Length: 317
Ligand code: UDP
Ligand code: MG
Image 1 (tube, rainbow, N blue to C red):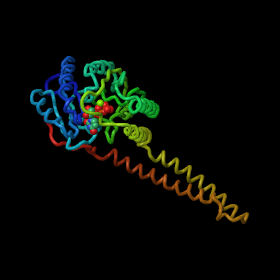
Image 2: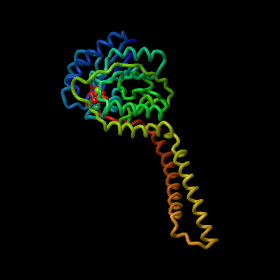
Image 3: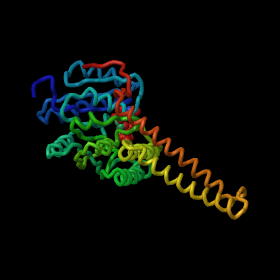
């Protein structure tokens, strides 16, 4: 490819990784040079408060392939990925962490798989070097759950080492912590997803930014993703249906109560059934209104201009 337009963009989020960044960059550069493709490396400094950006500034000065984006504060890994994706110009995007836990040599395996015609190739960390109880076990459960609920079966959603065709990264909006769900989110556009085993090392410098509480956030995100995938274009059909069922049940009970009050003369004020009827009617009306509001909201969502989820302090390009 002609210069200025790389074939491959490597996007790397980094938050307080000053001890890892230089060896990481050197290893990555060596591995990527070996691929023989035009490339760019985009390291997104996610508001580090250590010397990470000073280091990037120095590395950038000697290497035109290296770009650095510095976010104004710590926005989180998803936002860092999004900032990188927005600046990436390659037709293929590879993501990985800056913490030396991945082996950049695995990138070529991912690219080979992508070349077979896949749109997303996810790494699958074999022999993961992390604690069983707080990291690997919750992750296994989460992967099973995400796979069965979203229908995109992967063993390792949490693996940041992934390769995408650029259409994929351009077509998913990353809110919250949704980066791990990109393969699932992208499934609406009919992507072909493959998995490749990659190696994983223990973290040597700095510490992990996550703990067990992430599992809970992942599960909540899964709810969002499921909703986005299944119902976000037709909220009325979900809420409306539930609402109608509830309303119909409520009015049936109310009709029965009216009948025995009017024609059989028995009192109904002290009957729990009356409360139930009222509740069902109320809830039914509310659900239908929520469906209508949902319809309005998704129109705004789809028609409004995409709003950025980050603010950049400075960029080296
Ligand atoms: N990271 C980031 N912003 C954050 C948290 C993490 O950019 O708010 C980066 C971090 O520097 C690393 C990658 O995301 O390059 C993965 O983070 P970490 O290694 O802490 O996660 P783990 O490997 O323990 O799941
Ligand atoms: Mg890590």
